Image 1 (spheres, rainbow, N blue to C red):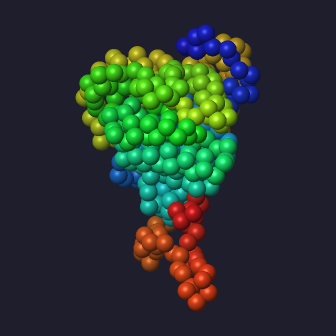
Image 2 (cartoon, one colour):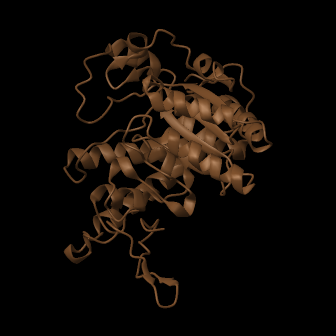
Image 3 (cartoon, rainbow, N blue to C red):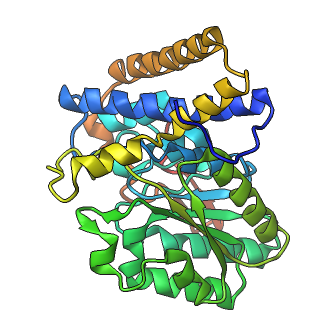
Length: 351
């Protein structure tokens, strides 16, 4: 089994935690594929298998007050940010117990309680939102960091350049995390960009930027901690290019005719879960009984989540227009405002 070359092994407890976090994402995504194949999840589905080290490493560096903005491939980000697997799966089932009452589905997970602001289906759509969140924090004098995840395909969009420019111009507390998996849907990076060094593009806006091995969770965490600390201390926006790879097709609808199977196989040799597991075993930190207990615990979590989603309830027809407009009404006679039941369920859409 491969190991992380040249990497200092952290203490056993922390390494085991990182391994657990990545495995939780992997098992959730594998279950999503199974449920989608059984027609229990409908619509679009984009899984994160292969890229787990990115979310796991970066989330470790954030505080509860920080904000996270993600893309449509966001199940893992939501899970590691603190949204329960049950609320995520119930959302995909379209059930009222989902984090958005079943109204968002796979691509639009949202949870105000954990400051997880999407789940954004539009390519590069989360970048301006992250800039806005960071601007609000700066204007309010809060020591928060907004982390924005996006794929390398977003760098071809105007929002990317506008967001980079404003974040640098206003020195906003935002960390941009480009998950470069080499393919924007079915288009290879070299076919759409004359300059394929994404970190260099960000540096062109006078933003501190560097590339990281996105298959190495230890390297990701180290880079993210350095960047987050700098942003939080007033160092302005930072940019990480996480060089990673998705082992599955772009989405469940993708016939995946644009890349060779041999390329996928080469990348799978650097599976981030296998790499950390191998490193821990080489250091004598992961006896087989510990690994078996870990996998059993994670499998139990996902099984419980599936049961929660399966037993959920569709939104009542009488509620279908709720949240389309605000429930807030103004009382002109008193100058006060009254709210009528605007709180949604867990992770509430109205909050």
